[in-house]
Amino acid sequence: TIGLMGGSFDPAHSGHAHVIETARRPVGLDRVWVLVSPGNPLKRTQTALVDRLTTARRRLGGPRTDITGLEGRLGTRYTIHLLRRLKHLAPRARFIWIMGADNLRDFHRWKDWRHIAALVPIVVVARPGAIPKAGLSRFAQQFARCRLPQSAARTLAHHAPPAWVYISAPLDATSSTELRAQVMQLNAMTPI
Image 1 (cartoon, rainbow, N blue to C red):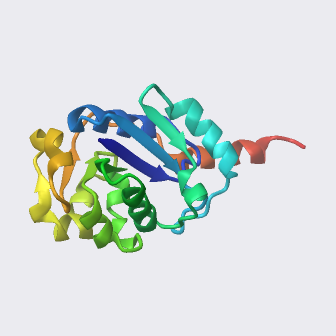
Image 2: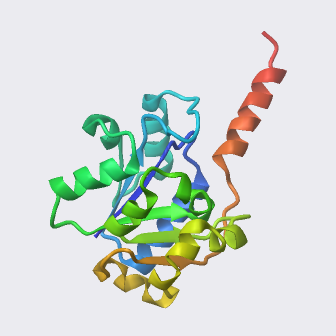
């Protein structure tokens, strides 16, 4: 059972690590693949892929967590295409998509988001400021009947998609957007 967590990771931070670890135990993930995207179609990436991979490996890598630029190597741009390729390349693997609740509220903006939900089970981890919004998201409303209780998270990999579970946990408020803003502020204050 392989958890897949994709994103820009610009930069990777403790909030990402928190989402990974919060999903790992309850869902029973054997491995997690962190898929650092060459470019997110929904937001502008400010840091080169090689630097984001390096930072992600340093901050998120571990014994059962692999940091990869697989999306770039496979030449996919959208999550739906990446998932289709992975399922074709590894048909016996049980893939589960991992996301923070902050991404769930905008999930309906992802290319073929309904098809993503029909392709792999999804685990959503609570994130600060996203809890009420995630529950009101188009995804949560459309797939309400496919939601499993948190107590059934361990069985998620054995459910035919669409299936998803929301995991509540202590929150880590770290945000890539805020970290980038802090770096920009520091750079603006640094004399040349």
